[in-house]
Every structure is written in structure tokens, then in C-alpha cells.
Length: 230
Length: 242
Image 1 (cartoon, rainbow over the protein chains, first blue to last red):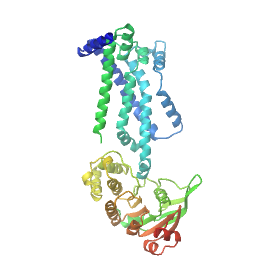
Image 2 (cartoon, chains in turn blue, red; image 1 turned 180 degrees about the vertical axis):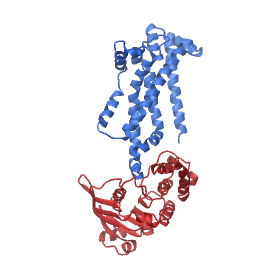
Image 3 (cartoon, rainbow over the protein chains, first blue to last red; image 1 turned 90 degrees about the horizontal axis):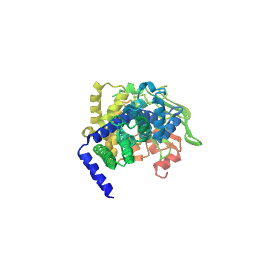
Image 4 (cartoon, each protein chain N blue to C red; image 1 turned 30 degrees about the vertical axis):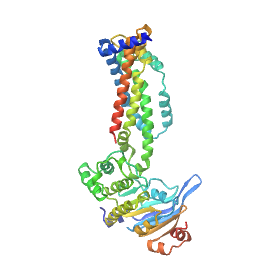
């Protein structure tokens, strides 16, 4: 118990002193996760909106695939991406393996189905609510999409937040395609795994606390935004 | 607003042997009607008689399973913006009252330069100026129906279809709503409205279409309908026995 409290005290000290290694890891983690979530949102919000409003042959199949992909095992994504990006793989010439770009791609693949599925459900429900009114007004579906997305913005922010939660907590895929290289691809989660295995609990706990603070801060900002919306 | 001749060009509205069936349920059965003039037509009947369904068919929101409907020989299409339909439970974007009116103007291809003037006029006629910037989530039932009317007014429709628009309103709101309807009538808009409220039908109708169990039993001038209905069912409805 004393070890834990001692480690916690050291962890807090590391945070308060803004220890350079810690700052570097946190910065890279945020860069990777935020980039991945932004790219995923740009793909999945339009995708989910279209799937939530238009019906076409194969619609149910695509929705089923999307829901299945929500539970993609990160290590499988990491492995597949590793094979594609490795020297002998089809995208080996891009030299992306063990870079932060590869980690962004991995997180993006994991997060896109989550945001897309949640967007689909939200927009579908909202569209059903207005469907008869749109028809009565003579409103073509494409002219209702932007107002619908705006009306659903709170739920969509929650979807993006869920995606960020998945991205920032991800270990398996980024470990495989990033390689956890010090000062290059080392992020919070991979560092926590590494330092814990080495018995260096102080840095692991400091990073754990920062992860919780980031998560709490983002949730708080979302609640504030939501409360300000009528 | 349209003049008499503008409205007249979309008439007659002809409903020819129209039926609407869902599985084995015949919800509307061989309906035949013709509307030739600008009289206020009230479709009267009890709940579940098929009034709303008939109105949605007239606007083209749904298609009949049998028969044909035509507005001056043209089949109904919801993108004919000379005609508006007010639903019993209208829905709005969770934005300002003004935005929801402008949305309709955008649909009809009205230029931004003309929108402000038309929007202000509709807000004014429907008594919504003071809440123009209010989010529609905060509107009362009466205000919501007025917004629904403003959304119709702004396109200057020649024909206005209304599906029990006052069913959830208190008496002062009903009167306020009916006063706005009179503005439409004075501006040569043909009114076709459903209701199950006899008092309202007596106040508003020039002619009555009486619907019962999916069939049109009577289509006659209001005065003769209320004084001497042709069918026992209509007589019972008027006397409150049905």
C-alpha cells in the first residue's frame, strides 16, 4: 500500500513539474488521437447521415457490417495494417510503419465504425420523426441533411466523444504499427503498458492520472456545450 | 397572395374511385369527389373515419392503392408549392421560428433577397413577430400551429389543406388560428380542412364532405348538411349519437 501511495505522490510530482518526457508522450498521444478522431468524424458523420436517410439495395448489409466493425479487435487491425505497411507489404513503399501516421490510420480504422454507427442511429431516428413533414413540405432528402445534422449535433458530439475514448485508450494496434519507439511513437497507453511491465509505476500512474483528467475535461466541456444549447 | 383565377387554374380537384388498402384493411373505399370552386370545404367525420388519410392522398404524401386523384388533370406531387398541407402534428427543426420559415422559402427556390420580406410578412400575419428568434422547442401548441400556418403563408399557396390543425388547442388559440385562416380565405386561397369538431365545421364550412368508416357518405353545402343531412349516419353524427 505504501508503494502505491509513494508512486502516486511521485506521479503527481511528475505532472506538476511538467517533466519533459511526460509532456512529450502526452502531446504525441493527443496529436495522434485527435487527428484520428477528426479524420474519422469527417468520414463517418457524412456516411452515417447518408445511411440514416437513404435506402438502397444492400443498405441493411452495409449497416450490419458497420455494426459488426464497432467491435473490431484492435490487435487484428494492428496486425492487418502491419502486414500492409511492412517492407514486403503492398504499401511498404510509403515508409509509414513505426510512424505516428500509421498509429493515426490504425486508430481511425477503429473509431470510424463507432462514430458512423452512432451517427446512423441518431440521424435515422430524427429523420423518421420528420419524415412525413418533409414529404408534406415537398422537401427533397438532400435538402434536409444539413439541418438534421445540426439538430443532432449534441448526440453526434457524444458519438465523437465515444470515438475519442476508444482512440485514446487504444493499446494493441498502436503498439504493433507504432512500435512504441521512445521519442517517436511512444504514447500514453503504450508507455503505461511498458513502464508497468518494468515495475516503474510512477510514470505509469502519472500517465494514468493524465488520461483520466483528459477524459474528465472533455466530458465536462461536452456537458457545458450541451447545457448551453436550448 | 393568389387571385381567384390563379387558384382556379389548379381546379377541379378530382378524386376518382380512390381506395386505400393496407393488407386486408380497406381504410378508404371507392371515394369519388370533385371540388370546383373556392368554397371552404370541411371534411367531417369521427376519429378513424379516414379524413387524414384522404387529405394526405390529396396532397400526394401517399399514393392510393386504387383510383386516381388529379388537380386540374395533373396528379398530386408534394413539390407543387402552390399547395400546402398542415399536418395535425407538425414538426420543426430545432432552430428559430424564422429559420423554419426560411427553410420552406429555400425549398421553393425563393432568392435570399426576397426571403426577409416574405418571412417578415408571414411572421406578422401569423402573430409570431415577437418570437421570431425563439427556438421551436420552446413553442406552445398554439404557437407551433401558427408557425405551421406561417410556413404555408410564406409560399402564398392557392390551395391550403389542413389536417385537424386545432385539435390540441385551447379555445382562444382556436379562435386566433381561425382568424388567420380567414386571412387566407380573403386572399383567395381554397381551404380544405378535416375536423371532427361540429362547432368548428359550422363556423368554417361552405361545404361539407362527411366521411364514415372509409366511405364518403355526403358531399353537400354546409347549410343543407347541418339542417337536412341525407343519411342516418350523418344525422346521428350531427346529433352526437355517433
